[in-house]
Length: 404
Length: 175
Image (tube, each protein chain N blue to C red):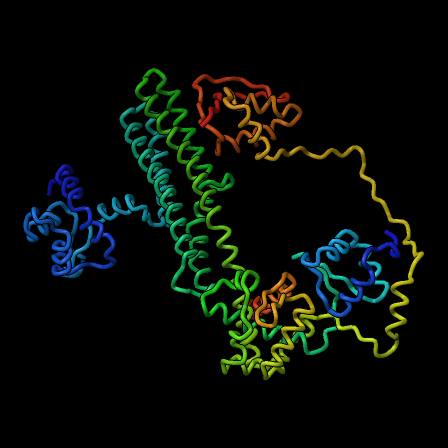
């Protein structure tokens, strides 16, 4: 059936309340239930319920639930659109993310072949695939963050009085199944990072290969910019998600462990009696009594009058003068100074001057930090430039940082 | 610092040896211990007492592992934690952030809990109140006119105990 976008949006705009009710219906709806919803939202000037029901079907807003007759549900694309509009994003699992990465690897191979044999059509097809996959990755990362945030808020505002363990299990699942895979996306020591580096490198070689074709350069640079934006935004999403979930995760984890410990202790008392826990031994409390060898007054005399004792000389350990501590600057401190210096026309040059006596490795470490998580708007120049950072020669495309 | 110059030496010794836990609530004594921790530790060690500083920043003397208080207080605490959790409350928030009413405690009203308390040697409201007063004296809780109480930082020793028992259970399962 041919799609009619204008008719779809006109209908959706006029009957949005109906769509919203359909969206929030968890399971499929029978004919009668659909009719009931249609009647609930039908205005006096609207066509008949039969007509509206048929429009829902013809515009592919609803479809039959597979394996059931006369039960209807929203079609997947409409659900996805409403999820986006209502910020009800679903979490993307690691398996889906891995699927994207496999697709990227395949596109990279196609792209490389196209560049090597100079086939512009092949390159354009591969770049389109790369851009689409990168955008999906970016969108799913953003959706993951939104879904994590929503779940955190639900757990915090829990009015069902769930036990700490149950609440912890919800957050723990988010942590393990969704947040950690996001970390894999941005971590510099994971293969994903290397894969994206490889893809960027192939795109750069394409820019050189097709240097005489401005339209090809534009397409290839565009794809490279998409990768950069995806990396930056996934990093930001991950840090935001961590900030939202970590305090809750830790508080619930602690509570859950305490509760489980207390319940285990009570179970043991049930099974083997309180003596089996050896509580006086584990939770010893001083209860000093004077019965026996030393009287109360003797001890007092000892405590109050003891004086004149001099401890022996402390042993001092000297540090050899030849050992120099390596310099590691705190990125947050450098970031604060960088923010004050904005706009900066060349980030690497600025860092080279800022870290005057530091090694090139330290300068590059900081450069990497700010490149992936910039404090302002990045502006990459197209002219290659040579640098000398404390005796190390290097080349790079200058990157400027402007104010947000 | 020379031992004879240690501040509040007498008061600290009297309190610590009777089992009192010194936390930041007792600001002057806590400061004295905190500022001269090593000197105090050596001084008390010379008298046969071991001064412990907990990671949550409170001080106490290591005990001998005898007496009934530890058992009673720990069983009381386990029941309280399970009860708070059953009600869907955040355990740490409830323990340290809210006043618990003594007459609302479930320890002697629910059969299962009463059985545990009996095992620990408490079978009456009076016994329960005596235990709470002792916990107050030792710095684990702060009581308000015998009607309500809130836990103080040293109660983390009970929470450590919960963690320890949970870790043992996990270890047994792994074995």
